[in-house]
Length: 366
Image (cartoon, rainbow, N blue to C red):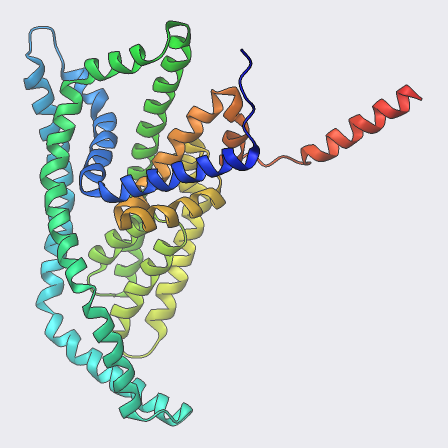
């Protein structure tokens, strides 16, 4: 019995409804899926360490526990470094607040002089912005508790994923037919290598950029140089948006703590040079070559990740796209999508080749 052909518009409608349902589920279960996604990345990153610690006479639970503890200790050390710098920043916050108020008063007078906008209208505009921002306070509190739950859930998920690794792998193999086992093994192996190399490359890039940022800010005499350098390196992992925010933060601190604008100009020049070095030397060397996702797809993926899961979604989007590309590259029907995600730019489009073939065939038939 021949299957009934499905019209194109009906296929498109079904796919769109499927995507809408998928996005709704991902958004509704974000509190569960976000920590699980981070735990999967962390488990894959820690897998070589687990394999090294796992010995025949050592209980598996003990090996997994040691692996997770080492990973959590490294992450906690990073947060301790950032936290100690934030504590120093908070001590100077009252002074910075007074300087910020004086700066805002000067800006208010300048706007009134240049554009004729009265102080009352400016205050009303700022008040409306603050009132609209208060609606986000509940979301901020929710984000705080969500972050707290992630801190507790991610190590738990990571422990379970490493402990049940063999069970999960057996399930994945058994879901597919035996004739597809080679392709499944390829996808799993490439996915593991891509995520491990991506995460390791990202960490190396972050450390190098943090050192360069901090060193530049220390030379320029900007306060809280280490804090701003580390935050700039973390934000730098987000394409375009992170780089802009990373520049604005030290410029703002320099404006509040120093007179004149020479330091701010120096910060902008230094960060632009560092970003040029990162984009052309550091990132291609440690990250881009291993992930092979083009800049357009990376940017769109970051925006979509932000719309779906907020800031965690922005950081998870690129590893997710890397996995999707690996799968697409190994399934014949999806190979065009894999090429679209990749960073290989063809010198000519395929339409020209097909047109030449048709013309050649017509000439040969004549």
